[in-house]
Every structure is written in C-alpha cells, then in structure tokens.
Image: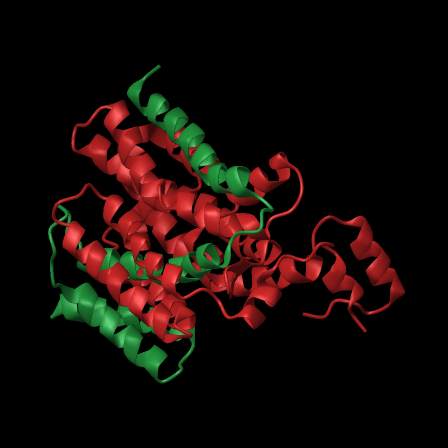
Length: 102
Length: 257
C-alpha cells in the first residue's frame, strides 16, 4: 500500500475507534457527582484550548502574535455586545484580512 | 422542548429511537458551523491534493471527517514524514474526543453499537452546543448539529480540489481566523458560572504553555485537564436531578401538550 493510502486507512480506523471509545466504555452509566462536575467543565476548558491554539500557535508550534489576534479581538467585541455568532465570525475574518493587507 | 402536536406525534415518537425535534433544532444550530466547516474544507482540498491525489483527498474527507486530524496528517506528509508519523499526528489531534466521548457517555442509551454510532457524530462545535450543563448532553441535538457539517466538509473538499485556485490564498482572506472566532462564540456561551470561567482561563493557560514544547494536538487535549477543578464543584443537587438521564428516552415526547 502506498504511503497516502496507508495514512488514509490509518486515520479512518483510529478516528472511528477514538470517537467510539468514550461512549463504549461508559455509555448509559450514572456517574458520581464529582465526575459530573468535571464533565460540566470539559467544554469551557477544551474550547479555551482550541481558541488559543487556533489564534496564537505558529506553523512551527511557536507562540505568535499576528493578525489572527486582532480578528479574534474583533469577534470578542461583537460577542461582548451580544451580537450574533455569524457576525462575530465575519468580523474576525474581515479584521484579520484587513490587518494583513495593511 | 415541546414536540407533541397531538397523539399521532407521540405515538410516532414512541416507535422511533430518536427525537426528531431535537435533531431538527440541532440542524438549525449547526448551520453556522457548516459555513465555517465549508471554508476550512476548501483549504483542506487545496492543500491535500498534491499529497493524497484527487481520489485520496475525497476518500479521506468522506471517511475520516475530522478536520484537525486531516490537516495534521497532511502537514506531516508535506514535511516529508512517513505514514506512521502522519497517523500518530492524527491520533494526537483526535485524542480530545476521548474525554469528550466520556462526557457524552452518561447521556447515551441503548446498545453498544448505537452508542458508538453517536460517538461518530462528535464534532467539537456540535458537542459543545449539545452541552446542557450539570454533566448532561443532548445526543440527538448533537447529531442534528453535525448533519449540515458533513456535506459541507465533503463538498468543500471537492471545491478545494477542483476550484482551489479561486481561493488561492485563504490566509490573505483572513479565513484562518474563522474557527478561533467560532470557538470563542461557543466558549462565551459556556461561561455560565465562575467555575466555568476559571476552567476556561486555566485551559487557555495550559494550552499556551504547552504549545512550544508538545506536538500539535497535545496542548488542546491537556487543556481539558483544567476541568479537574470540577472535582471540587459538583453540580447542585437540583441540577443533578435534571442531569440524570431519563429512564425512558421518549419521556420528553410524551410530556408534550
């Protein structure tokens, strides 16, 4: 098998297994309150990780402060004013593109 | 959420193992996600074609359907890495689905195959949107929120393959800011209490601190460790009652007017 098809097959299998693992291991069980406390905070913790790596991680996994940060600040402004999500996304793209064009 | 328009709806809901109203509500909530996914998929198609070929690129998007892992794997190939390292990068970038799936699990009912199938519908954004607080998720809503993203991901990949030159430089258009902004919007929605804010700040700090040292994917996975402060803040008993999964998955439909 060529390299590219090996990668495709490998990702198909591992992605399906990883996505199934949590539901298969613990499906339908009642968890103790402390575990529910952790689960309730997983979304904010992981989303914060996605936001900062998507904004500040450079191509060589270094930390960079570039135009994306300006775009994110614009989106944050829209969200702070309770603006719609789609507008926040468009502002992020527009501000980032404008800052790059400068 | 009310679904009962009459007796026939309730009877219909009894026969079906899922809740159509929750799926529909999820589909509506998932449309903005699909927009962001489409744009990302176009750049994936564009970048992957020289490495995977036309057929390989489409097959990967159809069968893997995991943006970060696909980007991570082709980045390794582009840098001259072999199949094993490309797959390892994909696994690391997907690793956050393990804690996400564990979080989802208590809200799932039914056979192992059925639970595993719900797991396949996990995408960051739809999973976060399906979070109902107190450790409870709405799996049908999550499936609905993922539905529009699938054709967007596959179709966007095809657009990138065949019309990629139209968006030759996604970065000049600022499109790489799309997903961080979207995740920020989801995050703002999640900050309902001080503990959530503390978890978000710690998660961000962990991811930033690890980014220069850890391979891509690991900082995001380990940002989830910030949720451990929840050990000391279990949900209020009232939230927990609500959080306990219904014994009868169709109960909600029967409660309709």
